[in-house]
Image (cartoon, rainbow, N blue to C red; front, side, top):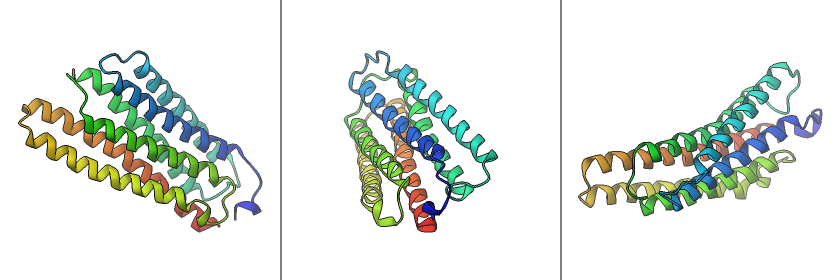
Length: 207
């Protein structure tokens, strides 16, 4: 149980900081998309979030390697760190493609998906923050349900966006570009649910 282990708060600090970077990355992506084609410094901000998250992930794994007693199972720590980092990597990869693909405009459904991603990432961040003191699943349950609801909403938006994309007679290059963007942001949203599942397993095993 968490409360029987040494109170090494460093791991929890690292988890929480990673989660905040995930939220910040998604928020910068929204600003970038809303201000299209005037990105300002948002793309660089996302790159900075990704670099900072990589450093935190490396620090967490290095600490995991040299710490004898950890707050919970090593494989769960590894999966949680990797899952949080994956969300940020997905946002970074997507953001870099926006100027690279020379888009003419931003699809409305894409903006909707970014909002879903932000809500999912915020719920993940809240759940990660609670992990420090969680003793039973009910203490995270509302946030885990919210993450699941956001993933379901993301699925619905994804299907609607693809249907609209294929129906409106766009040129094939436009369809190819936006199909990739929708799949990438769907991956980021799915990554939030993956982290939620990891958190659920950690609390069930250690509560």
